[in-house]
Length: 355
Image 1 (cartoon, rainbow, N blue to C red):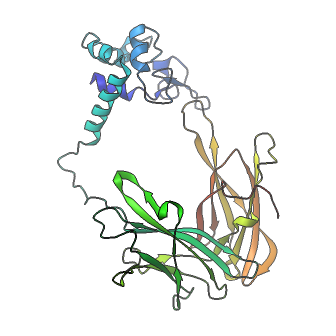
Image 2: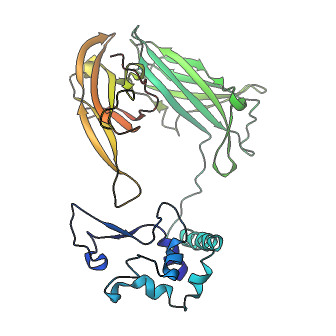
Image 3: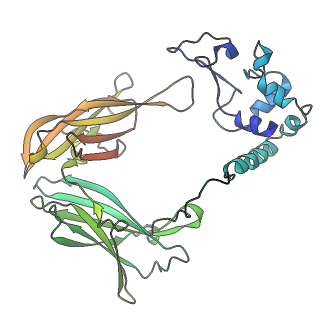
């Protein structure tokens, strides 16, 4: 119990808005104060132990004016401070914490039914860019990752890959040959000793016919055997060309920061048959807060406006906002279906605005 409390209270503290009687600070929802268990709560360390033993602690569950609330003090001293003294050594503290945390995490009640072991995907696609060119066609780029860990049945030197995409109506298929990455022979390493081989693909999709989904074909050149992956039996990996994010026309204008705020301009193209629906930018703002190390995440919704520019069946929309630093955003089209281009990052955006 002593170890569990000491390790758990190396982070966090008591909020005045929730427990004013413990921290002796009036409850004020607009001005919450976090009284931490130890001075340094940026990482797991044994400050909670050392400060308790040397008498400098501000831990509200040790030094509360009402001794009834001093739960940590009663726990820590329950064995005459033997355990706390042992945990003064930082390496010992970390080892004891690792042990108690593992015991907590690895304990499953007898009435809980565990799922099957979660296995890594054998193949995983990543869509890089889906944007409209000046000529009215769609640039479609991305990568494919194949698992080649020992026991996967794959030889990273004996594998080829194709992406097969389908028109907007799902009828016509088009084959795109993927190219193995050259950096580190295309190999990458994941968690728990997993190994992967990576391929890149790039193609131009006709704007008139568009794209709706794709499948992935794996070939073993030495035997000419093939396997087709269709997103866990769903018929393919979906792609929606209703809304296209124009990365090259958008910008993160970090050269023109005013009062700590960075101008951001986002350009999107919407198919004409859907262009009457409202288009919004949903951007995340990271706000510093005194009560926690991590920032608060606040959503801002900004409306797009049509620029009047049209290109091969798409209409251009633009919006602008300001952010404190790099962040993420979504582009969302209204209506029942709500086509969305999500989890876009400001990092790759051009630093100079051209529109």
